[in-house]
Image (cartoon, rainbow, N blue to C red; front, side, top):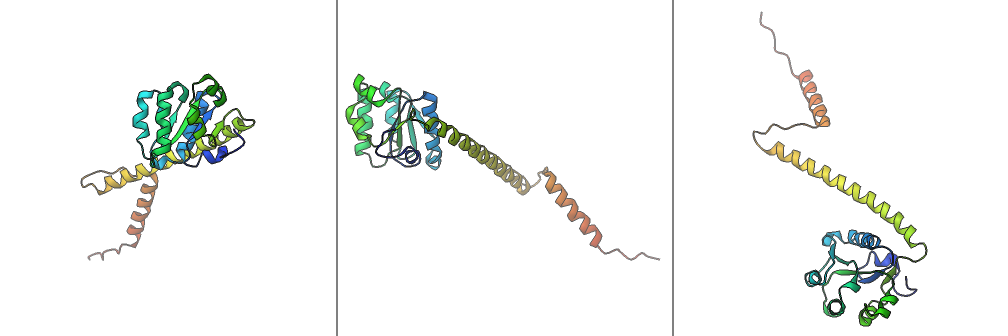
Length: 201
């Protein structure tokens, strides 16, 4: 990471677009997936791999767009990204991945200087000392949160399905074990409290 500007932990949660370099493509994708988790109410992560996909992606007013290697899109596409950052008020958070370092891409001419300058305070180097270890721990915690959320959503969907079956006339509802137990208790209580009819002689 560069020693100025936003810290890595700020960039993963705020709306600033950024350059993300170093590490493997899968590590960069995992980082983008983490930041998308913080904005999931705005839509799923959208990945751009070709310049032809860029135009539609930049039209999104919100959400997170991940470009696995911005240097491979070409300078014209990078200019399109720059105009989006400069002129578009409502835009997605752009995570611009890159193989190698930003300085190396500038030297090779595969990264525009004006785009680099625009994002000079929003850069993350995945090879920074200690960052990979910290990310592994964060991503493990994130996986647990996602699993718990998915389980809760499945449980809620099942409750909604059961409630819909109960409301539907003529439907035989399969009761859950706890429902059968509660129904059995209610039936037993009703039988005990019901008055007996007087026998005729």
